[in-house]
Image (cartoon, rainbow, N blue to C red):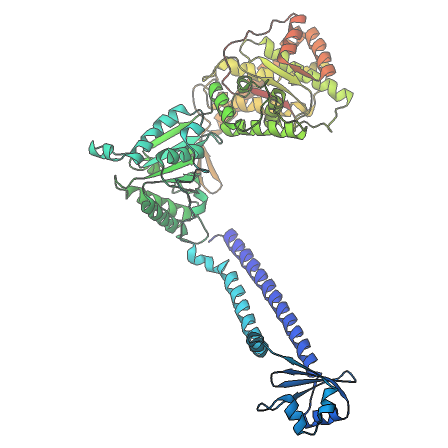
Amino acid sequence: MSKKNNKNNKNNLWGVVSQFGKNIIGTLLIFVIIISLYSGFAEQSKKTENISISALALDIKSGLVKKITVEGENIYADYQDEKIKVSQKELESSLSQTLINYGVTAEELSKVEIAMTQMSGVLFWLLNLAPFVIPIIFIFVLFWIITSQIKGSSMQAFSFGQSKARMIDPNDEKQKVLFKDVAGVKEAKEELKEIVDFLKSPKKFIDIGAKIPKGVLLMGAPGTGKTLLARAVAGEANVPFLYLSGSEFVEMFVGVGASRVRDLFKLAKKAAPAIIFIDEIDAVARHRGTGMGGGNDEREQTLNQILVEMDGFEPNEKVIIMAATNRPDVLDQALLRPGRFDRRVTLDLPDVKDREEIMKIHAKGKPFAEDVNLKVISERTPGFSGADLANVVNEASILAAREDRKTVGQYDLIRSVEKVMLGPERKSHILSDKEKNITSYHEMGHAIIASILPDSDPVHKVSIISRGRAAGYTLKLPFEEKRLHSKKQFLDDIAVSLGGYAAEKMIFGDITTGASNDIAVSTALARDMVTRFGMSDTVGPVDFGSTTHEGVGVISHSHSEEFAANMDREVSKIMNEALVRAQNVLSEQRKALDNMSAELKKVETLERQDFENLLILNGIKPKEDGNNPDTPGQVIAEI
């Protein structure tokens, strides 16, 4: 057990002891209050004086008694001096007969008010049993509190081996998801339809000798809909859906993860046909033998049990295990071999048509205005995942509600796209006149170079309004779909990124921190060109980007120190050449840079049409429109 786990265990134990102590103190306080109240009543009852029946008779004869109350065998006498005395009457005779026997005349007795009260059986027993019942109840309450506290902490060790899986019943219409609720990912849905068919009618597969995949691994970037698609498979097949996270297998006790795996598969077999879904499976299914955690690493034992359980499946058990991860490269190879996760389904980021369909799904139930055009929004959101698009629609609704409007307009959706990309507008972050002038030249440096260089994407928006951490930004979006990127495109992108840096240096003879993000992004791209993409003539087509983790804190690079120096020089060469290209373009378009920067400073934001009109006025031909964009747009933001 690690020191961290020991520390957490001590903290948990201290929390349990602390809470237990608070409960004990609270219980004792309640008990003291009850005892005090009971003692008060008892003390009050002790104020009454017990006297004999003969003494009571003498007091009645003397005229000292004004009222007599009879409760069962007890006689309560109220005296003229407000005292109360208690006596016992004879059982075989009435009160009047008893007093007459003691010499009280009828005339003397008539001067005293006599009241008869009949005590109920329940009240009688309660009053008599209260001194015994109250302590017993207190003991039971104290025992219940102690037991509950133990169950909430230490006693949980007895249930550690049980699965933490939650199950969605196929008859629960509120949580049921179908393929029609998942837009895009057409190829993934086609792959998974076979799983649905097997769960619905496995006989036709078994009769022909086909073996259905035992495991399906969903791979894709975060937010692409892996969990939603798994739920849709269960919904289409109308079978129970058992789901949990990979991290829920691992606890500080050795063997708990393996026990939970056994219990999970046991539950699934009882509910068969069923689907087991493990989200973020890389939490327990990483490569074994890395030296992390020693030979008895709990994660390795959990993975071993998962491998055994998947191998133990029979073809007719009708239990499918699905898992999701965005890190398939770290998974153990034994998990991916045939017979376990036979099928791997990749979920890509949605294209322009898929993005429009996804937003239509998320737009259901929202009052959209007539001017809303989701196609335009889908074109402005290349590279967005399904989760990002859901956030765009939600943020647009929030913006409309914040302004007390009943419908969501196109302007709300456009603003929400920028909010999701960069963050909210920082209205309190007002730039000084000097800073606004620098930012205007900086952003227009990006925009003009992007408009001049042939392999750069066209500009759709330029703004010097602060958003998030950015003092200003330039939004570029491609016209047509791109799956492959060329060296020329990368070089032009680096030159565009350095356009703000070049503009500041040329106009003001100085540079600011606004170009820090530009330099970081362009340097990373240049390094990838050299180390991963083989786009350097000096280094050649060799991959130097991979590293090997040999143990805790030990990293082995796949290149020598000499090659590392060469790569650094090549990255520096690419950056410097891009800077020269940017400076040359701005020098040639100095007049356009001055005019357009002044206009940007004045209006603060230029949309695509306004920007292209300024290009035409300054003798620059805008880039011609093409097909719908479907590659990630680039936002050049200054920090």
